Length: 509
Image (cartoon, rainbow, N blue to C red; front, side):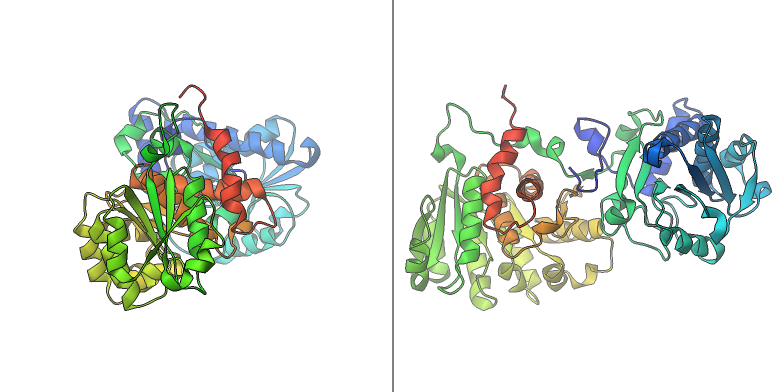
């Protein structure tokens, strides 16, 4: 459900698998081992590029400039150019380097191009109605320089639609980060499965729309590769989603507790509580400091209210084990008192979501938090930091790529980590990672993260496994924002959720 128009090849959890550049290289080798010639893979890839190019041409006709690099990405470009020329279109091929220096399949596909090849220059795109970027693929490991960089600058300034092959040249397929000069594509065609860089920012924006083309790679290679990275979407967690059943009742759907801040800081917790209720928790209670009772009572209806004072009071509320999931952090305050509340909640054994101030309060005290989490290994814990909060808890991990940062943080903390942003990454301690790509720009609004914490604790209250619960909450959060549209404020998110859920429910379940 990408706002950029990306899609995979169909249903099923394996369709959402993401492959690193190294894993994609292995997939190609395995395909050959299983009897698919490498030239067939390249021919099929070029055919996919050619088909997409024809869709992008204004009016279905015009001049196409194909910019080919010295490797297999360039080989794909030669195939696309040949097929487009054979279809009667006006195609110009510009090559970085010398034809005689090409090797392997790329050399063979260049030999099958029976027309002129011009050297790559910044002028090679002159007069083009569509540019195909087949310079460098996802495996590039250094910045682009020289004439290729000049051509990219001209391409980006041309105002002409650009179709990228695999990834826009200059983009790291694993991290979504530019390595230097990078193509800004209108659309990207990739093969077999997407790569993390297609979803991670700024790669998601640089790719434009993404089409995944089947090039004949046998699907059983996925079992051999055993990737632990997925696109976040319903296929990943639908089987664990806690749909209500006719024989059920509210007490069987869990009781979520959300901890409120002081009188002047209550709104964030109420947003979380309403999110938990909309996510399906059977009951939701707001635990309120005495000085905030009147403020909270005047704003609550279906959400219940209980007073508490300090960690002992919170422990007393959670001694009722029917309250099986708790959210702490939104506007709770930063410091020792919040650390004590978190430790009390973890000691009580409820499934726990820690956000915002509950995370920042442990900056410099990370070992205490991780030890408290380890002491309740049988109960799920989810941490939901944005980049700043993540840096305070995991300062040594900030230079790693986003999926690897989240993966290492989850392993270290023993919790599921939701590293938020337009490309939110969800990571489990066992190494599983999901990358989300459905967040619209208007989701960046005050209080949206509080609602996400509520969605998460509401699903945990219904005993959804923590990685699946966090992944579902993140996707539903984005989908609810997309369903509402521009003008969204955080209060709209819970009330947009039913529309999204109606679109997911299986009528035979």
